[in-house]
Length: 436
Ligand SMILES: Nc1ncnc2c1ncn2[C@@H]1O[C@H](COP(=O)(O)OP(=O)(O)O)[C@@H](O)[C@H]1O
Ligand SMILES: [Mg+2]
Image 1 (cartoon, rainbow, N blue to C red):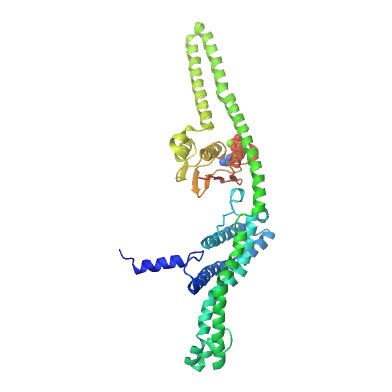
Image 2: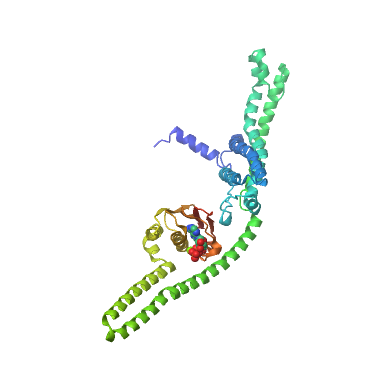
């Protein structure tokens, strides 16, 4: 089958526009490299304009926060900065630079206050990039965009000079002011010069424009590594701690729950035995109570077993398991799970535990009329949010449940945030990395 003309053109462009410039030789290659530089430079200039307009917003947010007024501005503007940085990362990816996004673990959320900003190296690097790209990057991008146009305009200058009426000539002035045929020819020369400069330096200018992003938008190699080591040491300790706490919890649950009830059963059976010769009816009564207590003990044992590694997770997956939890909750609760595929077992178990503990709290403490569970997986992050419209005031210092959530989550390198102002509402938000 004959290759269509369109197909041929596309193949030609694909070969010419390959980032390593492995297309054809000679002038065509140089010209295409410069055209490509101008194209990507122009896109960079577009981001540069956005960055330039972001600078005053950032300054305003910073200034107002210093006065104690602008806290609400910090998080959204940092979110916007991340969006912009993400766009630049994608542009750099097209240019052959692989820049890994540095927001992970405790840095997953953009900083919401100046204090958090100071403690977050990746946010500070993003800001530096905004300043550099809004100035330096914008100027280079605008230059790259204009160079081919300027060269075409100036090279054709003598033509304009000859054919445009005298009164209109003024608007055509290029890099030099023209008022005679000889200066018009000089205009032609500047056009050639700009064209040659564009051919020679276009790709280099593009490289200069990309440089701040390449250096600033990835993870900081030094800080990141030492921070990561510190974090891993802490989370390893937390993992061991969580394990010990978990054993203690199981021991306590068995001791306070099932064991107590079985002791009670033993006492009741003893009493019934003594009553049989004296008062059989009363003995039957006592045996009935003993039976109820045994059933309670069984229910408690089941609850303990379920809390260790819920079999329902294995059988019905995360969505099914969470629905089962929600239907057991006395407060009406909606469940929304959007998790394509399955996450590692430890992540699913932790998510399950978080929801189980949070819903127990909703039932025990919140006096809420409704609750919601939302689980989402975006990329390699699983986000679990449990919210209720109750009275708020959850305090991790006041019990062991919320602290247990934090410990378990940190053991997996995740983050847990509790938002619960007095008067409500309460929201527990957990992010877990779930590398596939
Ligand atoms: N959803 C909630 N609504 C209101 N208060 C809560 C909620 N969750 C927890 N709390 C409060 O925070 C405290 C700590 O909770 P937690 O660490 O789970 O301990 P525990 O449940 O064992 O008391 C609770 O004692 C309760 O006062
Ligand atoms: Mg609790």
